[in-house]
Length: 176
Length: 424
Image (cartoon, rainbow over all chains, first blue to last red; front, side, top):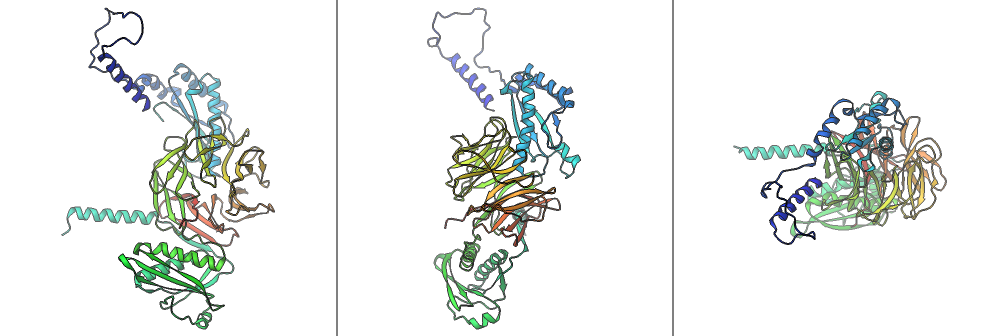
């Protein structure tokens, strides 16, 4: 939202710049580029951040990148081997698309204190964040947060259900 | 003939009433004190409707406390009529409340009452209040507080409020109700979870964690105006707000430097300072009432246990040692005992530790107890539990005898926080 506003403001500043006829702000002789195409000062091409990232993000909805969850054992915060190739694929995508951001949401099962479970979910999110960073994703690309026990995927009180709730979910730009 | 509009308005009003009824907390007494004081509360004389309403609130409050036994009182009695002590003694009452409600200026009412000690055949005092017809419940609570304090020597909590979260069909509501569950008001509605409400010491604001921006963020919310601001929204998770006793700072848990660790911020969100550090999880901070220590949960020793650090920084001291899961340490208002949740053979139960002797007593017999919160007089502890898969609130006295269950008709109730004494 803020980015869109900045772009709008930037375009507005450009339009305002086109309208002025005063001294150039940069020093040195003015250069006229005779080959430049004529720009109609009244036309504005809308640009949104989604458009810029749109084609890249489309890839995250297909194939291996469409898989976004990593599950954990009871009382464990270690990414299991079976998820290594999935994490590698996401890391590769983040490296190739440095403007794309990821939110990792860690989760815990319902047993015990809500705030302590929030901290346990954070530990899971942090484990995934560290692994992605080791594989080359930039620090400012990934944010690790926790939803604790608050957003269960399965709401029954048994191990089959709890095992689905001990997980990390990966969300890309536009999804959070 | 009713117009369409009138019918629509009526339908809406009925709908709103049914919503209010569903959101109403009902309190059931499931255990009482060993020595309940027998007390008669006569209907107040004067304006019949208002008088009866006030006396009913006083009776309900005292009975719900589990510390009084109501004695049938019969006909209305004004505060200035002569009391036949022998008769009340014969009826088994140790104490008697009499009073009246008279019309006052501007459509208001003057409520007067007097409390008598039947055994000593003496007056224990009385008061007068001027109120509107709508303030009958408030006045009743204040009379109950007066009676409670005179007879038990500690302040009553009948005029306090509680905060809690109701979850129903993908909707989360942070609600505030009177301590008797009446008059529920919604402070915040969200599609995303709300947890960990904490009252500011003056009772005007709540700090809480809201997930409305897809991650936990700490807000401070002024109840009267509905204005709220972000108190902690750093990279990562922000949670577990706890007020300092002077109401100026909040202890919070942030993950901006990696794992969940303790920090403090000013109530406006400025001036972040780290309070403690460990290589594991530190969370659930709570200030001791004198402001000297911060109690918290940490897994630094391998399992989650209660610890404390000096509020100004220093070494952490472990408080709980028995068992492998002791979380959510909450100090009593006198600072002498600590309520916490302990895992006891797979069951999560509420426990109370005497901090001087380190003796611990398990207070509940349920299996999913969470989020203890002391009443401001320290007598009761409100907590979240589960019955038949549904979230309910429950309260237990610090001696484990008096027990109450608080539930709403449709929905889960959780995350209770008992507010401070009101400023009269």
